[in-house]
Length: 512
Picture 1 (cartoon, helix red, strand yellow):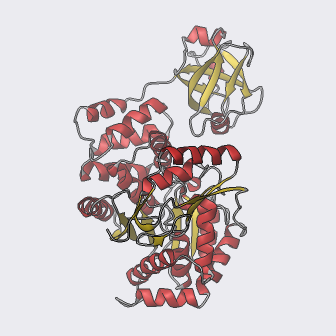
Picture 2 (tube, helix red, strand yellow):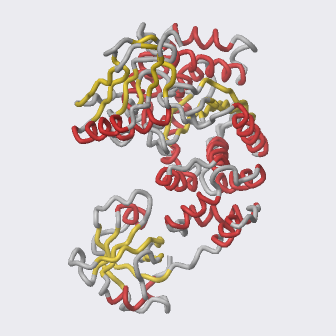
């Protein structure tokens, strides 16, 4: 790039030396400037200003945070960790500053707020600006909110999906059939993906699985898999794993398959919002970018799941099919039971433990997790032509029972960088039944929140261990679930919340 010091818009004295602040602002690039800094005053920067930072070799846009102490000198500008890495800066390097040009596509976001639909052009402009870092977190929040609920029609969703695919890398496996699976979420512990990948790839099909980290849940597939093997794979590493083993389980964010989606997910997580249209765009864009051709989507349906009714499941299924077909995918959807958590563990390491017990055919492996994984794997085998119609479940079970799936899973882990044992939390607390009766109701949302308060997914060993199922008889003092935490403070926090909200599990008299 050209030397910014020669730009007439940047006076030759209008520079500061960069200082690494070692402050984690997640994916948001932040610059710290003194309020009495001559550059800050000359340019009229104030808190939340969007500023273009340029060095001799790179340029980024960041949000200003104003410092009113001696944390940095008058001659310095501090950078957050994300800004430092994006700029690829070095300590003391000179940088020049200017107001960032406004993101013109915000006019389309404002229009959407007032009812004007997105077009192909406006969707493309928005996603381009998001990917290039031109949106502040406030603007990102406005966009996410404008799309929330059911405010996007299928044409808008398709337009956003195409734009998200175009903004990132795209893989081509050179195969007619490349299998994939996704669950829309909302069901704690539903960690079938690693088991399915092992079965499907052991059957000879190609399944390069990219998964996300948790958005509003105690664990995403990438969080859980990371307790067993590296998931932050480069495109080259991912390709080598798949070429060698036929499958992988990688974090989608590390391979930039849909970079705009990863930015939006961060804001959705902070707002605790799940947009129906954004969900579809997120799922389909990553499947297309990953080079998938045949995709099975699991829709758990339950009163406290993400999909609360069959009617909503039908609507979501139709939008997934329409968008996927529009972008060249073969999509099938499957409605599963979303009334209660799946397996025993809720949280990265505890879910990983359940996965291993199923793959190793242990007698105490969670039956529901095993059956779900076999059903979905069987459907993928049929979609991929590795099993005749109606025989997928049986073939999937034979691959699991024979040990082939376990062998394949170990091989995938080794190819991704080496298999490891999931961590164990040092602090636990058993929650017992306060009465005898039958388990009649489990609140998935409450259970997920309790696991998060215990520290999951940031603390990988944290979460809940469930000891009950719906319809099960319990007696006074029987253990319902165990809270796991990595610190005493997080354990106490979760227990205090539970005391104030005792309705996670409902127990009714047997004769009702």
